Amino acid sequence: MQLLEIVLGILGAIIVFGIYTFFTGMKMKKSVSTLSQDDFIQGYRKAQLIDVREPKEFDGGHILGARNIPASQMKTRMKEIRKDKPVYLYCQSGARSARTALTLKKNGYDQLYQLDGGFRKWTGKIKTK
Image (cartoon, rainbow, N blue to C red):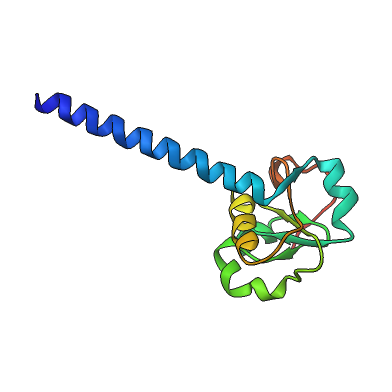
């Protein structure tokens, strides 16, 4: 009987986690538009291009013209980003930029875009320090 209770408890926790993950993912999708590299290139020159990776990652290579505002510092540095201009975000794979977009959306930013697949799929020009 105890084994059954343990299994049911674990199963319940997995279901709750799955539901939470699903709804969080839906919120993120509503917060940001994901763009292909070609669409990203067409728009980012007229926007604020933000690399949300950590400084060490940024220094290792970043998209030409990007500013580094790490996701871990976004809440304290958000004032550096204008609300009246589009914001183009990217990270290594797309997860941090999606979470960052959710934070920005909650704080009144509306024109949010992210690079599909993140920097690891980027084939355009880069700059290294």
